[in-house]
Length: 213
Ligand code: AP5
Ligand code: MG
Image: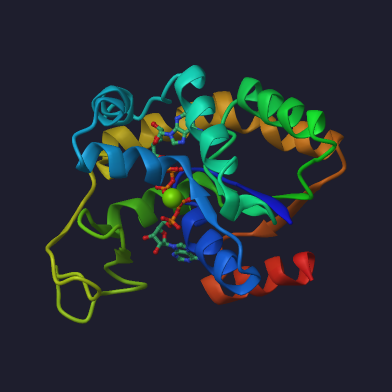
């Protein structure tokens, strides 16, 4: 099963993609997480991506597409995957589409996790991330057991640079301009399904599993 999770920054793509990956035993592939891991490890790719990410801008298609195609070519992706944060532009979607169709394959379903901008702004301001292991929390909805400390690895939690208010508004602007058109793109292919992303995360997941079966 090849699944795409679409949605604004902070819509809950990562939260849902993790649960899908676990239930359906397929890899969770997040371009954002790949970039963040590279930033953390100080790689050349990480340095390049950071220039864009810190502004709330998109990393150029050329770079992003290459990374994604390399990742999904790995053996663990043979039986499918859940893509989180990719594609994010029409050109990215077109490359993915043509690469898959050359192999006689296609995306099975694109799930749009729908959340209005007002909710997004509240969520991002409350999100705290562990830069060490990648776990995320929310000060109200999913607080860590000990304030400011990661439950998983015990490292300090931070407000990510790209979750700072000015960057969030830029990310939303970029989303509406460049990523939202993908909703029509996948609708036209007949694979789009939309779920209400403002519901409780378990209810969002139930709506998704009802679609995936
Ligand atoms: P990326 O890491 O993909 O960030 P994003 O899309 O901005 O989304 P987030 O990861 O912030 O949010 P999410 O939707 O995963 O929500 P989450 O589950 O964490 O990308 C980062 C950057 O990398 C981009 O800005 C760009 O520069 C670059 N990049 C990545 N991919 C790219 C591409 N393809 N092309 C070009 N550039 C690319 O949830 C958010 C918060 O809400 C959490 O605190 C969570 O606990 C909470 N929450 C989740 N669900 C619910 C719920 N139902 N109710 C209440 N709270 C909830
Ligand atoms: Mg994410």
